[in-house]
Length: 354
Image (tube, rainbow, N blue to C red; front, side, top):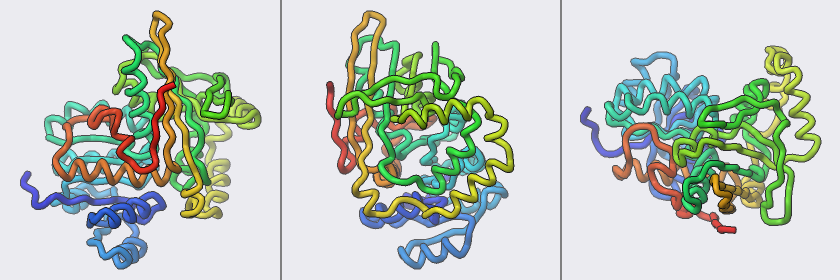
């Protein structure tokens, strides 16, 4: 398919993360097309930024195709991606448009990885997770894995988003509460009891408790490192651990319509996301621990800005590379396509080998 000059379309631009992406894009001199399903908010953003805009939903394939026919790359910011990724990816493959998104949902990573050959045949790159999930952790995992010969175990520890969550992040977490926790064993995703796997990580100020959570690297790091045993942890206190265990006893209740509705109504009453001041004050820290069968071990630490700030910076940086033709077709993780030092090109990041 012949397309004109390279063009970026940001879908879900009126969401919290989407708007941050637009701010970074404008600061860097880009002029993406603003898109989403709600005409009013999209038109307001278009007027504010002076960008071209398009209004369309994801329920009619011919409409999506028409809106993507002249687009080089889509940056998809409208989650939960378990509901929105497939129709957008389908359209990208039909229209030969490269696909990026900011998901952290394991099932989405797994589904898109299964479409690798389809994407290669279409000449399209599929790269989910171009934000806080999973750019820093994917890059750190690959870096640490290269420090050990034939690594067999990878453990990732993550300390905080640094501020309150956006509506989109919180909604995705709520919708997945009842699905429990996961690890990767022998290359296979394996379900474990929530709160049952706890260990300490030194994020820079001594040991701190962390609990195994279903982070996106259970899907992406396996493909970028080929390490068959992977565990992902989030810093947690005792109440979080016990709360997670309690949820694991009644997953049917947490996943029920009434409970989901109650939690989401409370979320809707909160601010859309952290303020600029909260983002500026927040920092996130990642630890990657890698071992091999001989007992050799490597530990690397990465410090980054607040997760939402990093997401906007990383997503736009990767979109710029794709617009410039710097890409590999098929399913890719950030570190697979651009190497483990990609994260170090982003503002405010620092990596240390321990």
